Amino acid sequence: MSNSLFPITKILKISLSKKIKFLSRAIFFSKNYDSIFKILNQDKFKTIIETNPNIYLKPLRAYLFCNIKTAEKFDYLESHYKFLEEKFPKKTIDKIYGSDDTLIYENKLSQNHHIELFLCMINSLGKEGELTLLLKLNSNDIYSVQFSFYKDSLIICGIQSRSTTTTEELKELTKKMHGLRPRNLMFFAIRQICEAFFIKEIKAIDSSNHVANCSRVKNTGKFKADYDTYWEEERATKNGDFYIIPLIEQRKTMEEISSNKRSMYKKRFELLDNMKDIIKENLTNLISR
Image (cartoon, rainbow, N blue to C red; front, side, top):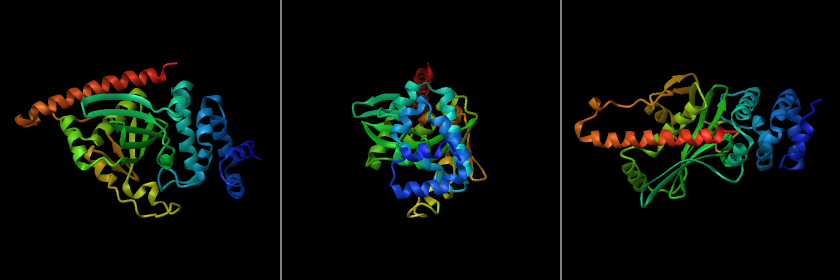
């Protein structure tokens, strides 16, 4: 008999009938639960369990993407927290997974355009990954990328607009960033995270494989976002159920840019270079013991 199932069942925030149902299924994965419980039961992850004890339900539900077996879900979940165990001190884990978002970049582009990038966990998006990169404009959420660390890869399973920001406001923000769209800023930041943590590969799910399309999810088939186009704009290549996104940003040379746009691109590249330095410094501080 598993040493972990009863302690796990005790802390789950679900009804008694659902706990019984959980046990009836979880017993077939008792070794998997023993393994993940051994990691998450550490004091280092206490905040995560206090904030979301139902994390233990994830492998038995729709999680990350569609074409994944239950045993693989355990593997992805365990791999992510092993990564955090190795890279992040407890104070950083407490901050990211607690009540405070962790700022990794900010820039007051103008009087009316203050952008901030946070590394955090949004539990309502937990099906799509164990971390969220969140972009805010004037304290309002506008974009998020959901991802998990898996071994030496970063897996993107969700990206979405998150506010009532109008198209015109986003166009104005793009103008203030010298033609850099918010979504492209997010990809640039993801690459900086990969560089800081020595990630060797960025993988992103294709649209058909999004967790919202899984048979266990209500309103299956209503996911309409075209992720494939997003990844292809980043020059990603298709590999099975995933797209492989280049780790290195591919910039145009000044010779490739028309003369009337060179000034704009120069300012954009300067913005990105400054952003790179700031994110690197902030991530270095996050993982310092």
